Image: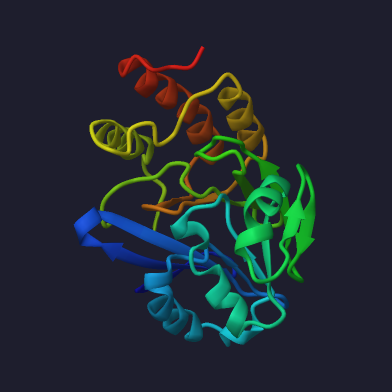
Length: 245
């Protein structure tokens, strides 16, 4: 596990899995009400708990956030809830209704578009992103003071990469998408008639840091990178002849 502070009070806890050529990144927000963004897989829970213990007492967690229902996003959610008695899951209204109502041992804090939660010094705004990166229930959180966007699988990059970069991540993202299109993960990030609008809404936030689930987080020109992401996604889907009309 590697721990790196990528933005004020935001700690990236990263585990690289060589067999998958993939980093799994989890983010701890140190504040009055600490939040873990990405609960991680059950198999990774012991390692992640040990890493988190270097930063805070895990029992002090108040919020456990994630974008969508997937094992690396929330597989170990209940393990965290068992050791953090005051913690609540944070997810979209759709996620709370169709997934967490059965999966979670504690009711989720359901968020609608534009809803906010506070961790103390910091306030987080929820942005719905259905089917971006994937999943009906998908959404992201935006921290409004330092302007960090927790963007889940958006801008995913394969490989064992540096924690934070200000250089191009889109070329690596495009390469990763094309690699996935050749195998069982085809259609990893769909492109729908709403994708461009969703990306524009994220770009309009003008974030300073993009905290990514897989690969380097980014602190270059985030707005332009998000706008260019729309072009990359269209190109990938057109290349494969699968763009949704």
